[in-house]
Image (tube, rainbow, N blue to C red; front, side, top):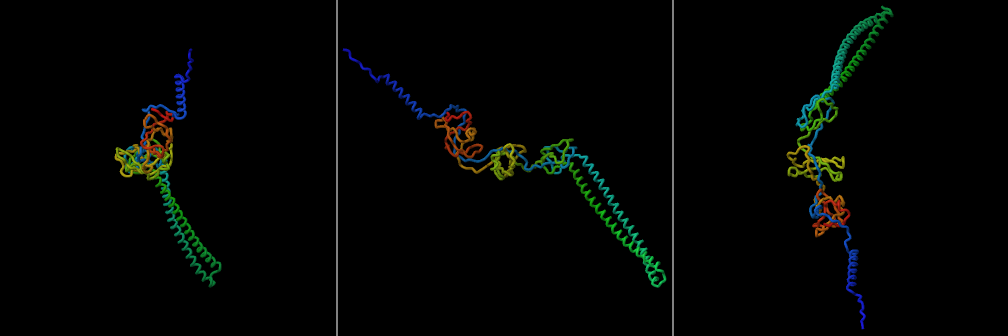
Length: 415
């Protein structure tokens, strides 16, 4: 009799399918619960810059470009205008104080000078004539007064004599009063003549004073004109290097026009342009250093120009001690301008990453060097070489400091 064979439930095939399902489910659960879901990007390590996070001294400074300028520059301005008759000295030559640089010519000034001279000669002649007339009038008045005195004396004698005769009834009343009236007339005439002489003399003296005052003013004007004519000869106000002269023979120069400058060769300074971001931290007395021919030279800010142009303002810096040998006007050099005291800090090098992150995060390399992960950090001060790290990094770690432009928003970089 045949025996019924029962079918087994746990067959090898079934067990295999169940095991595969469990493993698949476990993998899915792991991916959902524990797998790294961060976005990743494969990057060529040869195209990035990896820098060490270090502990060191942070020097707060900025690097600016300075241009050598003379310690003093004297402008040469034309006091009087005219056309250039002769150019005596060319730019680039050394001059001494008083050396003639240009000769100008101005026909109008020369004509006015001649006219003023003519007017002065006229005033001198008029003054001399007035003085001569005063002397002549004095002689005439003295002669007239002398004649009046003579006639008055005669009239008085006649009056005195007739007065006695009238008392003695020798002469008539008519004859006596006639003599009396003649005497009184001459007495009054003398008073009038004396007053007239005094008035004429005072008037002549006043005319002379007025003419003398007018003559003095005209002579002063003539002296000013003479000085103006002398200003047509442009001379060096000081000794130094005539660095430029903007005038050519035949060209017209207006009064007050700048035609050149003279550089003082007794010293030099550096003029540097500084970003307006630092305007509140730049002041007179701030120190800096400049390297020239392998040596460092200390500088001090002597003047700050507050006007901002194209996002920059300028400062003048003088050498604290010795001026570098061989330095020339117009040379440029890099200046390290100190903004604060040195201090210990965690440092990372300055790089292109800052433009993308604003210093808020960086990619930090792991120990294997095959992966870099995005990490939030806090940066403080910066100088041209380093950032000061406030939080988020430790010395010995490595970060990517090159540009992040091509990394998008990926959180993990793999190499």
